[in-house]
Image (cartoon, rainbow, N blue to C red; front, side, top):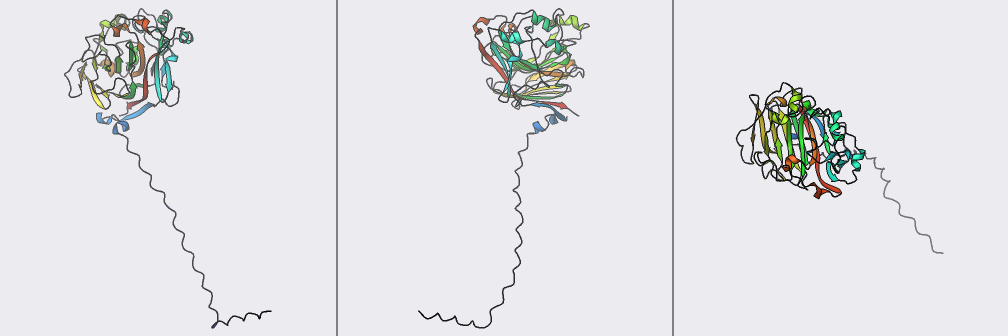
Length: 376
């Protein structure tokens, strides 16, 4: 067998002592989270659109229509077939089926249904909303019951007894109806005394409205009534009647019209526009897409107005009493509606039969609404 390996040589001297234990390195401090980026500040108008008027407001109501249904704690869906003026000026029957919430918007749908199934399911509720009885003392529901449905249906919603404003700001993004030449859509405010005093003594203001026909009353100022031109109004009355009920029977003798049109280039007649309506003590102002449109004020108890044409302010005009717009007993509620075939807007001539085809004829839509109320 092979000889064994020789043993290793002895080490030189004693073995070195073991190394002392090293202290553990301190743990690194926990990493701090990166700073969160600050969101961009909201525009001052959203914070408080009343500041520029020397007032402070609180946000009373906001609706972005994201829930998929209409918030009936804030809105009423009107059901009525009275034709609004003179027992049948307008063709539509307002029904619940004419209101739809989808895609983050509320839509008012105008449609024709030869079977009139919407009418069969409808029960008039306008008297519950305490509108005035006119003409001849008949309520809206009595007039609705006496009128045969035409087959044209649409939607109308309001905030009466739910969201009302005496002084404050209303902001909304709205697309008005634009698909046929008999449509008349509007977003507007009406005084709550419509039930006791009636119109026009309750006061009325269109934030925006638009006809799609070109045959409106030629007397209206600054192009109001031109096709596809949004307009605004401020309706009042000339003097205080001794008997409001008797005056309502001849209301056209009392009404004062103050109207104007949005200037060309400030709006899209076929799309959504942002409207702002400012109602302060002794003043009302209209804006579209952040641009001034018109303003009205209390001129010694009378309505005075002027219109901005996109470049400068025009001259003063106005008619009627300012009283209904600052009366603390008469805050205003909001209405959004789509009417059809009004003899007033068409100048009296109608050719309704060409629209008698089942299906949707037009729609008006709202993407959001905010109501601010003066707090101080």
